[in-house]
Image (tube, rainbow, N blue to C red; front, side, top):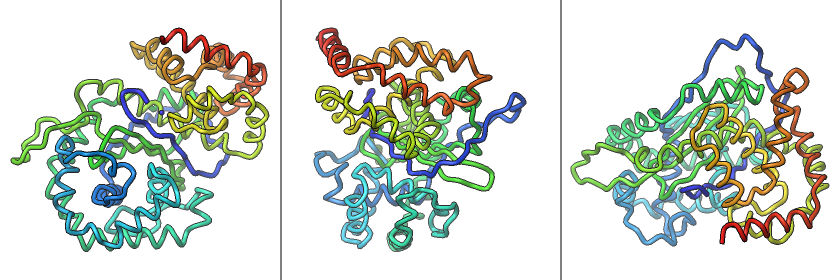
Length: 389
């Protein structure tokens, strides 16, 4: 998902249910809650001290541009052979090297030092592997206690609190009301979890279910480097600076669009509808998308829909560089069918009495794909290549 950042594809492993539709008297406005999660921070620490981790093994750096990472690698160096380090790599090898699937699994539990189950495991993948997940959360808890992770986080509370305050300053209070109104669906809560202990900019989306409704999570890395200071005196914390406005726009709007769309199109019915047009995933488009982490036609369609939603939400928020954002998605990222989709989605926006939610309109957007052929796709890609040269 590659704008000023390395943005990995999101796999949101949730089961689908009838969405809560928004009503006209939706008085209660929600905001994004920002925090650091000790379980996820423990997971990232374990990644950072492994010599085999795919995020770290090819990067020749002392990570002084990421102060918490530098401090963690120093503080926990003696635990590099702890069983939790190897088990974390085993889990990554069994799931996804980005860690997105593991992060989804961890969010079902209370935050460490507790290891109690907090939310129903709604992911089909983890529901079939509950025992594996339980064993891993216990492994994390053992490392948390053995290595005194809580003590490390407490020692650096000034930095963590500074990062939280910094990230909050970039969030638009109107974001959630606008998104819920546009997609026609209400959710219980929205959380942004910061991972200062991360080597480069990336974001992950996840969600869980509660008795009060769905909870959406976004997990994000620092926007910029901050030079390590031995005195631990910092004025910035990596979640601000040059390009930060675009960084948050890309991550926050984009990633929170995913849970409104991705779980819905994971249904077998819509997977079958999407598969009808998979011949459009011509080799050239496959190549462009694979470089971004979308190696299947379904993955392309998922991102196509999410980016469509992202652009329309950004428009509703009056984001000033909307045209540049649209152009980047099409010309740089290769989502060549967005212009036609934007024209079609105007029908959804003008017929909300007929289409109560964006999900109600997704089959129409998928039907539009059937109007294209391979020759048109190749022609669009050819023009794209000429325009960018």
